[in-house]
Length: 319
Ligand SMILES: Cc1cc2nc3c(=O)[nH]c(=O)nc-3n(C[C@H](O)[C@H](O)[C@H](O)COP(=O)(O)OP(=O)(O)OC[C@H]3O[C@@H](n4cnc5c(N)ncnc54)[C@H](O)[C@@H]3O)c2cc1C
Image 1: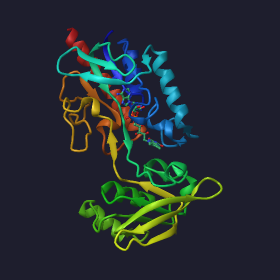
Image 2: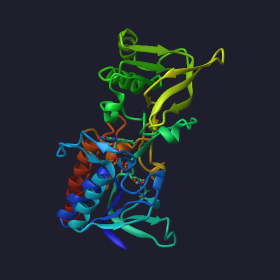
Image 3: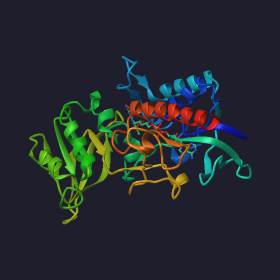
Image 4: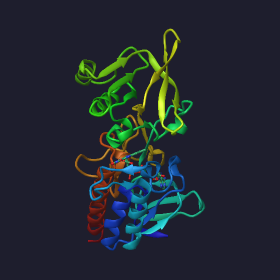
């Protein structure tokens, strides 16, 4: 099969790109993946409950429903959606060549590719984590911090970098107190962030401390955290109604490793203000190229940019 443009991914970035490309009559083919990178088709929002900060939904919308709607909108304008994972992608010459998990023997080609494979938050696999994930545990304070379950409650953040500091500062608006657990004896966050954090009256930073278990109540919500002093090994059970992981994200870039320029953490590098990668005809959108904002709306925004840039690229090629 040869396509003008292929979109890889199925989150807000991929579907926004597909909607624009389909409306431009470029007949995009979108590979939504089959548990690709451990995430169901539809992306990260399929793992959450209510999304309250995406404009246009004043009453909020369930993450799964939002992604079902985006998928339906892509299809409505003629996107061909394939439930398969792209496992090989050769960007060394045009047309680009790729194959998929369910038909590895077939090679397909495309004139342009939008990479929107997303990212996933790192987890710690602590006892209780699976049970209380999204029932007290979150990897995104901006997404979940304002939920009623966290209001005026003791909250914990794990991590010592800039993200952890930012998440903790953000959570001070909602929690009764925010404790940051740092495994080492120092914060990796920038000096300014670190001093703002340490000076905040609603924040305590506990160095040499790690979480070892999450516990909850009969209502299924997290209520306590077991923390351990890394030096003495002493454990303590603390009241905690929220636990925010800020231990990094893994962008899904194994497919293009060695082919596209990436930063040290594997995020695809794009030319600032665009979705251009270092390979002409390959565009990157969404969390896979965004280590900073990682929101549905910013993913959708860059998905739109990728589609408009791909469209222009294709028309220049034709001319
Ligand atoms: C629990 C949780 C709650 C959140 N809540 C909010 C919120 O309230 N508001 C908000 O704005 N943001 C929220 N976010 C963040 C938001 O979900 C992400 O910023 C957004 O989904 C990123 O979109 P994306 O299009 O980059 O890709 P993703 O949503 O990461 O989706 C990428 C998809 O591509 C697929 N894929 C990967 N590799 C391949 C491949 N090789 N072939 C085919 N498919 C592939 C993956 O399986 C995945 O389904 C939340 C995130 C999480 C985890």
